[in-house]
Image (tube, rainbow, N blue to C red; front, side, top):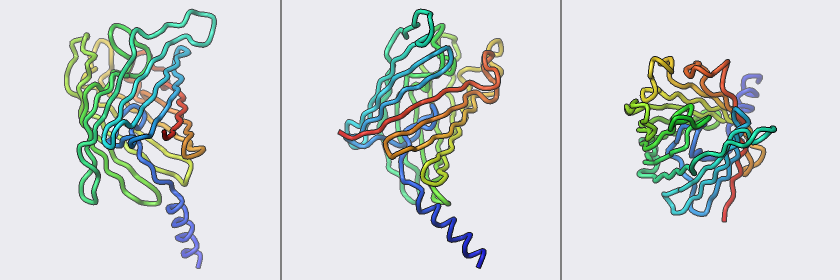
Length: 242
């Protein structure tokens, strides 16, 4: 009887897990897209009192487009360091997910993570990428994602193609755990980076279907010379339809 009760509780947890499609893990793109008429607004707080505001819109059934802009030293008594440019992202889904095959998408994202210095971000933007995603149901959703990218931040002459992989796991109907790894092949200058790649994790709290709080921990492998412990950020996401 006890075993039956445990199985019943686990089944209830599984059924209660919400269905959703992530278009991004932390910074890693998935093959998920916003549907036509959907929009996502984000506000990300990061190091040096940085604030990044962004929006993404599902323009067509298989195509989404977005922009980002921000600055450092937003809070405090120093002059805000406004970014030199607006960053863009776009994604088109080439193939939908099936029982046997993953969803596949082609995209572009010029927004990296952290400060923008010497023509690059602390963690380079993905640039042009091809990504695949496959979801499984086991006591909630498990999503596995991976792909290849080529960043346009090549002023440092490190212009190799790059690989990334990640996953997400729902816990009940409110919590999502995410992890991603960027190989850093396009950012492995021995005089600067430590050649470990970038490993990031996040906990997402879904207060409603529209409102999400993302608490992220970047560079847990301490690949960047400025990282102490980890690089922490908080992002608020709001989804809506129009």
